[in-house]
Image (cartoon, rainbow, N blue to C red; front, side, top):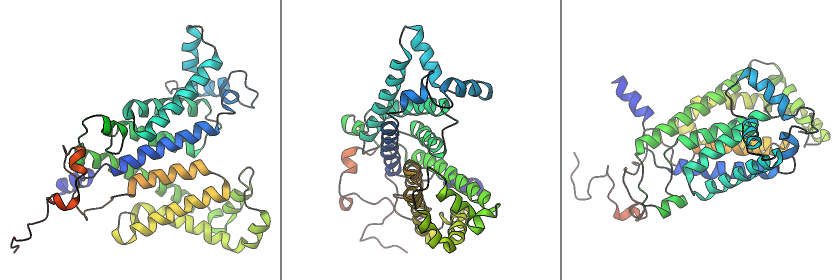
Length: 331
């Protein structure tokens, strides 16, 4: 009995709506990442960059800690072997990353685009790991799940070009369930760590976060006026993150907690200027617990093998697999 319940939990029947959200959201995320770093791309990753920490120093440390972690130095070494300059390789990587992200947006060559975007983004993050932060790590995590998931989804361009048929709903449910559990673990330990420090209970962490350059978007005068609410904000963040893995599964509290988490990230983006960080966290939440999520309640997922034309039929002419006919007598 327990084994059957575990199987039902790990392999729920799901549609591919969440996969569409993850694909489009990550495509938009990587597009904004590449465009925002365009002017500083060569400065960040060239060996003769004028920054405090250039790529060669970062990759030297990375080689000691994680010798098999992908990095841009590998691609540059291959380019040098064939007589290609470092600058050309770096701009080629930037262009290819942008093209892969655009392909994810429209759903063209979904699997190759996801693999290329994941690999190139991971190379860039590892080559600047001293300057990277949570946004880079969560984007890499999202791209990793995307490239392993059963692509393409029914809203992609690939589905329009090819003879698309829906993948096994239980396989789609498994990948979504793994993403859900991962997101819950992230929030729980993030909230638990905050609860261990007194700075989140008295508002000091909120004050430092909002007044430290370059995140001091809000005027100090405004913060002084609202200083008595800073402890309440800190406690609310601890409660939201720690309670997320428990209350987001319950039907009565799911929508409230989902909106609280998304609202928290919107506030972080508006008050600290961390727009890309807020965007990737909202994308992961939408894919994990957003459209069509149900936990043992709701309508049945589409069956594997349904074609795009069958999916396009109106619901009233498609018999529900769990609904008895109108003239049947149910005892």
